[in-house]
Image (tube, rainbow, N blue to C red):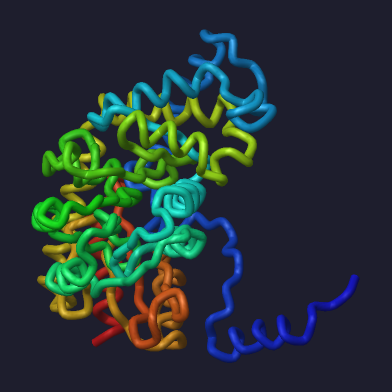
Length: 379
């Protein structure tokens, strides 16, 4: 087998030198403070059994979609599930994509046109940025959650179709924008607001509907992008919006058009997870209790200055330096707690961090113990 070209092997060597080389982790039985499975749905026997029964009841016994949805892959579970999602999220229509990455790539490469403008939060996810790079529109970032900086850019471009892009929960910081003021600003400037709700689904709202709905802003948001690999514990994503938006994406979103659809089993799992979300509100409440307990404990242990302010399931302690944050993470892991370090270049140099993901199934004792360990290692 031929070796990598020198330019590529040099880049790998530089990652290793900077203590930033990514490697696939091994499965572990550590206490989970790392996964996005906020409600524990990925391990739910009820969802597993209900999905299997649904497929049997509806005579869906094929293993794959067999093709793209525009050819042979649009099996009947898709329509049922998209209708369920749209109703749950009080949206006219929903269009399922194979992943959150595909949804963002498809949306941002297809919707903004040449001559349009995209204004995006500087901490938006890589999938949003990659989609924007494929767009023919011009794009500028605004400072994180800074509406004054956003308006400074808005007033510079009158009479332009503008898309404003943010996340309801930012994946690395766990914080949220002031969506109510953001929507007021977009209406003032007649812009289109797009919100990625990947880390809000299952976490915010009475039934885990997301932050937009919990604030009753769904009528004023042009599009919401939701993913199922986090709070729902399965796989896939959807774009929520008008029927005309759905039709446009079906016709022009290349990451939707040119890929094999999800299997009936995958789509039925999404449907069953939504049904569980409707019923199992105790999981959402337990998650909220754990978030509150985590915040109380970090205050009690004088850890609050380390952490980015967050009321979400993502809690990040800034510990600059790849070597230092990796060392602390390894020590926490050696004590039985799966806490992952987030290294540069994933985050900017000097913003390296420990990222704690909270779940409904974490106990208060586990939360207290891991923070006590962190306190002992820091102080």
